Image (cartoon, rainbow, N blue to C red; front, side, top):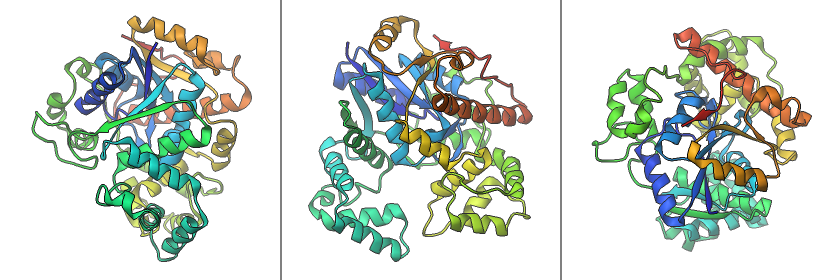
Length: 406
């Protein structure tokens, strides 16, 4: 059985994701595909625009065979930790053969070479990296500069854009994680098609959109504009769903800042903590706070993740414990296709970690640390659901919500 995996957000699922799915199957000849999808919150440090069950249904109706949950401790982490969890989970499942992803360069070789250089971290690399940081560069910029200086021929291949493009960077982190974990996973990449990752405007209907443009249209209230860019089979999954955005977390964040107790919050650097404390008595929206805190040293996404972790009370110590325990102690199933029963049977035979379908039953089967990770995700999901309910949407209780089957 040939099984491929994707690490995704599907925020929301659109025709670009459908292209990724079909192209991956074409290149690998896969029998089945498994998507590891961010749960209630995403890597940019925001709530997922639609809840995880609606997004899982969109993916399943478009042809994904099995959707697993990427829990909040790592769905909202840096690219390195986001990738590390995904590679660890697919490796632990045993029955997944390769990880497929789109990239701006469309070729595995330069990504693999960059991953090897970054993973070795020679004294020369560390010295150049520190030099850039001392000059006030952000970590990503300093790292890119160091690698360009160490391996100019590599970065000339794509006009030094290898480390400036988000899907390239994520692909490099997948490969680095594979090296660190000595994973048997193969990696397959192909040229990403369509709008730029950060493109905010919707393209012509014949062109593939960015998820950012779709979210922007949803935020403006123009939900009908999404129809040409989402697979017809997936549209019903989100009709009537109430989308959430970063600023829907503003009241929660303002209250949390007033409460203090910033110690050990994941990604909340001392400099950000001090600046937050100075503005604690001045309410602001979630995105306004990011703009107020942004500097050369901290990217927008880094600050957004730190603020989200503060709002959710996500502790660095907990995340570190999960990492030391191997990242992925279980795999939670969000949904599957009825015709994919052979895949489920295959994974139950090959997996070294339990496959969960009912959170309530997990208390009897999971060790304490794994249970703590699951309960952290459940709490974060209920926070998201409470905010949606107060905004006028329905409420989905994690202990009552069943697996999505299409």
